[in-house]
Length: 202
Image (cartoon, rainbow, N blue to C red; front, side, top):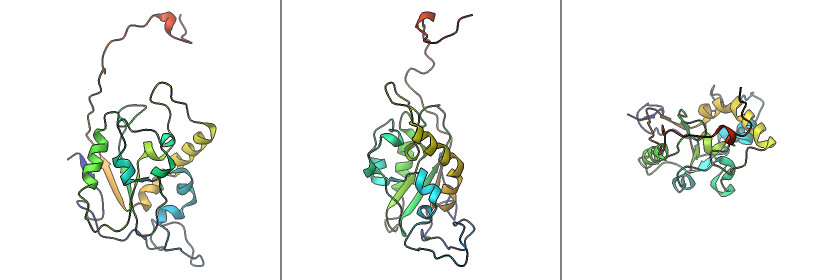
């Protein structure tokens, strides 16, 4: 199967609350003297995660066209901060292509199809962590601006703390075995040496 849903039972959507036990080893570092706001999702309680990683609303994700835009090119209305009762889904996947993880929309369709099968009684909102949509990215199309200095700092912070997103999320989707046929791939291109800007010729 191309989709592995790694929830509590390993094969289907679980029925646990999205509010984690503060004493859980996967929760934030909380001492006995600290108060825990149970109206806040564990993701939002982590200052690093909430600063550098954005969560995409499922409705916004479903309406994205392929290839998906970068995080910094999405309007603020696509993102939300999770509250208690919301379901945070973290997507784990490999990038076959260097600048875009899903150029043809194959992964997006698989994620959407899987989430369509979730129980109708599933708690509150569903928010997604998808690296390309949740963290500032480099250009993948001609004419796109590179990351700003501030976006580079956010990206670096996200790389350092991204593992925690998978610990505090409520569901994890692991994508594996996808082979995307990209139009024009493997074609031979002939370029004059003089057209290579900045090229060094021995």
